[in-house]
Amino acid sequence: MKKRIGLLYGGKSAEHEVSLSTARAVIGALNFEVYEVYPIFITPEGEWRRGERLAKPVSTIEELQFGDPTTILENNITDFLIDKQGNAIQFDVIFPLLHGTNGEDGTVQGLLEVLNLPYVGNGVLASSAGMDKVVMKQLFEIAGLPQVPYTYFIRSEWKSDQQAVIERCEEALNWPMFVKPANLGSSVGISKATNRDELVEAIKVALQYDRKIVIEQGIVAHEIELAVLGNDNPEISVPGEIKPVTEFYDYDSKYKDGSTALIIPAELPVATVSSLKELAKRAFKAIDGSGLVRADFFVTDDHQIYINEVNTMPGFTPVSMYPLLWQHTNVSYSALIDRLITLAIERYEEKQQLHYKKD
Image 1 (cartoon, rainbow, N blue to C red):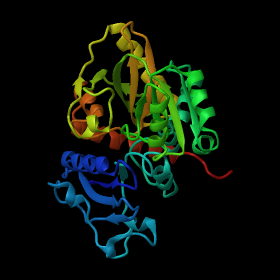
Image 2 (cartoon, one colour):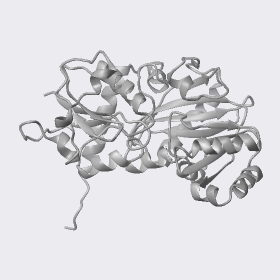
Image 3 (cartoon, rainbow, N blue to C red):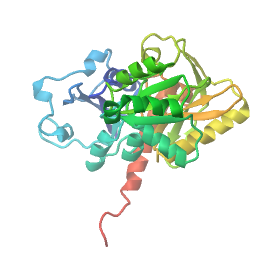
Image 4 (cartoon, rainbow, N blue to C red):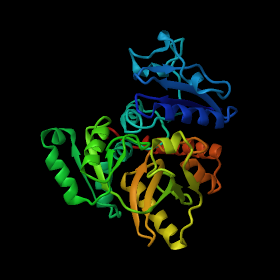
């Protein structure tokens, strides 16, 4: 029997276009002899549209943005579970390919939990904690993971007393500082500040994307990433190094201009690699991860390691860092997708053993 897969992509997010690229790549790698594939598209406005079962991979991203008004699932968001004849579609697993807010942050995961559907990737807690950089950092502190100094504030604090926020940043950190929206991925809204004027401008940019802002200490270090795969006993890939031509790894470097060099495996001492793998596993467990995580680190020239963040739905095209890391760890792109689907079903079956009423 073929497994019936619902691919969930697009989304009301600044990373909508990234999600479309991911969906096209995954569809191209799925074995249509093994899976029945149903596309479920979420527009930038948040409308849900389900397409007909795919018979083959799509050739363009435009083919993924289907739907006329009759296919909009705005009256009942769960209509994606019903076919045109009104019969229920029994999905074996939902594969969320959503990046950023309203998809990677626990919201969609919560919906799928309520619907009691198996789904690929991290659960509600890990997704929401992995999206909120402040909560993530606080969990890492509890787990004893080394981090660069940071501080944070919310929009209302900035509106009421900008001078106090600036002084707090200067007391806690040295220049340069990196200013980030707390709840966004793909380096959207991130700026480097080397003085007060740049800090103010960077904060204004970040506040366009989130009400909570995190400010981090800038350091001179190599940017190292590792891929985590599994549930309770995760595997860790070889490390890879990001070498951006720009000052830091921003959105354009990741997705547009191809100016960033990826060195896989990273040229690091064996002891450093061993430490990175252990820290990646601890970070995965600190957020109660499942399925997949990309763990990002800073490594200084004297081999000091600091965890930067984890990404619970990393870029997932064949040329993205997460799949490339597994490719260099002898797991192909298509095999990686198969593993993630299997892990999702295993986690779902384990949850079904729980009791939800008193005997």
